[in-house]
Image (cartoon, helix red, strand yellow):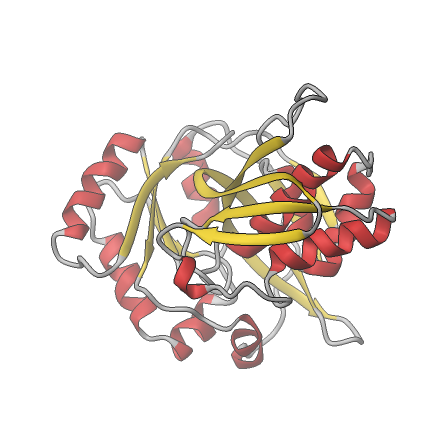
Length: 294
């Protein structure tokens, strides 16, 4: 997350809401309340949405950016929900003018909404000067969604349970990443409902120092939601096949419940070259080269 240490006189704060990638995602069980238990190695990228907050008497939200049409400005918006929940928890009665620059596809498996909510909590905590602790923000975040606590950190981590167990990990190797979304929103609840088979067993996780070793480790893991996501949205299989056929792609996989897939390359220059190649054939897909923040 962007450094939010600003002078008290500053009345506007901007935060980068980094896209999240589930490098692997194992479904390890299901709780009695119906929530699934997960085990995932999570990385964050240089691309993402942006949240800007400014002093105001009321909480308002304006959405801009290429994917603004996919969102509504109402109580269902996670940014709105995050602002109101923080105000309620700390007893704050003022407001904020919030602007969301929506650069990431909606409902795409890369944590856009969760990252936006996390960035909102961070920014308003500073703007309002309410002094909520990281633990309190994580508790509030978990009420908003399983990915919000890990997005509050925006650093490489292992996420377990229903999102409440976060283990910091070493930074990821310097690899190029190509994110590809075929322009499709996938419902996470429907994906979990379609998942079949046994639950995955826990694995020993450490972050290899080299990109080659990381890709070899990840190849032994999987995304347990990939098969049911493809069942609901067969075009995901086409995206994965296209990615795996690109020169220099070391690994391709679905992130989260989709429909965004990622390919890992030796460096960002290789990812940019692959982006040019795939864009020539699929101009209607969202294709973005990037790199890990760590």
